[in-house]
Each structure stands twice: as C-alpha cells, then as structure tokens.
Image 1 (cartoon, rainbow over the protein chains, first blue to last red):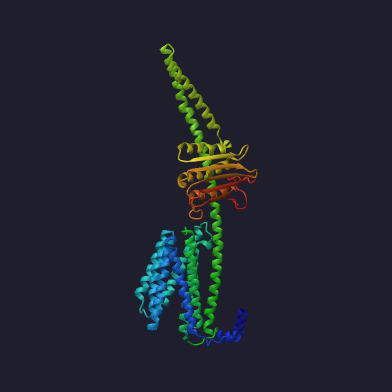
Image 2 (cartoon, chains in turn brown, green):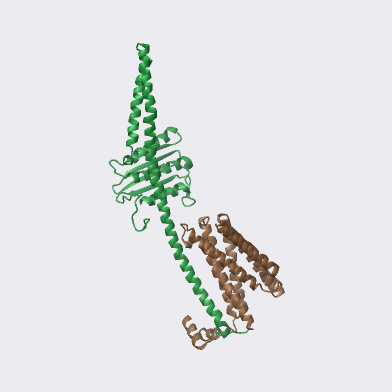
Length: 247
Length: 272
C-alpha cells in the first residue's frame, strides 16, 4: 500500500526492492528484468502504432499542424524499431536518438508554425527551432554518444513554444472547452513530457558526475512519461479529428 | 547496474525536484483551465452582445429604409405625378374639347397619385409595432410560388396572437433562412410551413420532400444561424433530416417566456 511505502521510506530509508519483497512477496532477483523491459517496449510501440493508425484513418479531417504531428509520430515509430534492431546488432541505439532529435528539430517548428497565429512570434519560434537544430548538427562531436544536451535544448524550446500556444488560447478563446481543444492537449503533452525529460537528463548528468549509475526506476519514469506523452498525442489527434480544425 | 537504494543521498534532490515539478505542473494545468474557462465566458458574452447589436441595427436599418422610400415616393415621384396632372389639365384647356384618351390618362394619373399617397402613409406608419409574422411569411411564399420552381403551402393558425415585433422579426428571419435552404439545397418538389399557437407556445414547422442531409455533419452557416437565433429568444429548435427523405425543422417559442432579445436578463447578461 502506498502509505506503508511512504512511511517505511521516511522512517527506515528502505529500498523499493526490500519493500516489495516484504509486503508483496515479490523477489526482484528472480523477476525477469529483460522480459519486463521487453513488455514495456512492446506497450510503447503498440501505443505509437495505435496513434499512427488512428492518425492516418482520420488524416484528411485533421488540420495541418496535426498532420505534421502524425508524420512525426510515424518517424519516431520507425526510428524506435530501427533503434532496437541496431542496438541488438551494435550494442547501442544512441546514433538513432541523434537522428530522432534532428527530425524533431525539423518537424516541431513546422507544427508550431501552423498553430501560432501571431506572425512575429511564429517566425521567432521557427527561427529558434532551426537555429537550435543547426547548432546541434554542427556541434555534435560524436553520433555514438547519447544527445542529452540536445534533448535538454529541445525540451526548453518545446516548453517555451507550448507555453506560447497556451497563451494564444487564452488570448483567442473559442467555443470549445479545453477538453475538446486539440491545442490544449498538444501543449499539455509537450509541457509534461519535456519538463520530465529536461529534469531527468539534468539529474542524469548530476548522477554521472557523482560517479553513480542510473537507478532502475529512472527508466520506468521515462517509460511512464513516454506513455503519457503519446497517449496525450493520441487524444490531440482525436480531438482535432472530432471537430475538423482547432480554429 | 547497481541496486540503488531509493533514498540514497545522491537521489534525494532529484526526487524532491521531481515531486516539486509534478506539483507545479498539476497546479499550472488546473490554473490554465480556470483562466481559459473565464476567457471563454467573456468571449461568449461579447459574441452575444455583438449579435444583439447586429439585430438592433437590422431593425433600425429596416425602419430607416422604409422611411427613406416613403420620402422619395412623396417628394420625387408624387410631385412629378402631380406636375404631369397639371400639364394634362393645361393641354386639355388648349385642345378646347373633350378627348377620350386624355380623360383616361387623367383618371389613371389620379389613381396613381392616390395609390402613391396611400403607400407613402403605409410606409411611414409601418413601424415595428405593426410586424405581422403570418403576413410577412405569406408574402414571401407568394413570391416563391409564382416562380413555379416549387410549391410551398402555408397553414396559419395564429389568430389573435400578440407577439412582440422583435420576436416576430426573429421568427420571420428564421423562416426566410429555412425557405432559402429549401430553394438552394433541398431539390424539393413541395414543402409546407405550419404556424400555430398551442396556447403555451408558438410553433413554426417547415417540412420539405427534398434530398435531406446528415444534421450531425457540417450543419452549415444557415442552420447554425437558426440555432443561434433560437438560443437568443429562448426557443427550442429541432432539426431532423434523412438522406432522400426530406428535412423537418421545428421551432417552438414558449409564449410565457417573452424574452426580449435586445434587453439583458439573467446572470449571464452583458455588463454583469
């Protein structure tokens, strides 16, 4: 039970593993972690596939920004599968994450260009996205390393742009409630996910600096964040398809 | 990968940061939804005010147009007709005898001057207090039926009905929109309009035998306008249609309501 976990953590500073063993007779030493990770990846890929299928089924009723969103999710789906195969053969999938990052720097400005109405702000955001993308491309020393700094830069860019989208919603309210407004779900998904990744990769750098390795729960947090992220993207696509356009 | 304790010193700060982030995001999203709902309410009130202002100007423009036409008839055409009559009298004096065609022309001219005088009086007198919904619908339908494109029957059972001119104008505009839709979209051969009073409500029903449509898909500006006008006056609107089975639209205005569409009422009225 959650309150017992919090109590024992607070009082005795116990580890999650020992708590699980004592209260639920779950022995993580015998639990197949590989199988667990494989199941988590399968769920993630299935969610991406579902988002893509629904995106293409409703493609012609989506407005322009969300057509680009469907394209982005498609590229990420393909990249994740290629990454998994690459990791199986080469032992790492970091080069694929560099490519995903570049794709995101290309597609997110296109999405925001079609959502934001104010011309000056629109071109500022597009310019910032292209500049960051080019900066990352020309300053990337090694495609084999994980692009944590690039992801942090992308996170700041997306969070800022999503806040602009939310501000635009407040300045130009429509008859739709926020629950039915695709821009709201899109911006919320971005803010939640990219805040989490920004914090996570900041934490990762700190952990590596103090000489420790990433704890297991770190991967679960990233997985949960991804699942929430793409679920909200799916909701965004359904909200946009449901009423034609967001404006 | 080493088995890390959940609360080793190296992870206290990240965990706290993560928790704070989660709380901040939750508060932010809730705060945004509240702010947006307020902005939406303000937008709806402004829209309602705009629609009311638009309708006020529509009524005002109509009144001014009628007065302007009456003035032109009296000042220009009436005077010209009177001058023609004077010239004809002078012409008769010069001819010094009776002329059949001249007499007929003078009679016709007298009738013209009399009819114009009557029309001018009617136009001046036709202020808002004299809008008769049934008459106005009947006149529109007479014009439509004479074209021969479609026959629209009108059944009026609203004797002795007292309706405010603003409500009458709203209902008239809705009937015009419905007739327009029948002519433009329905491809119907016949249609009927029923206007009757149940004692508690005034009911306007329009039905055609046209090609129908899906009411849930892209209703179109015309139908949205009808729904918006119904909301403003507190009437109910029911639109039913099936493919190739025609369309049925019913507007029910509750007579106890007597909501003045141009005066604020209720807690959501503008300015409150």
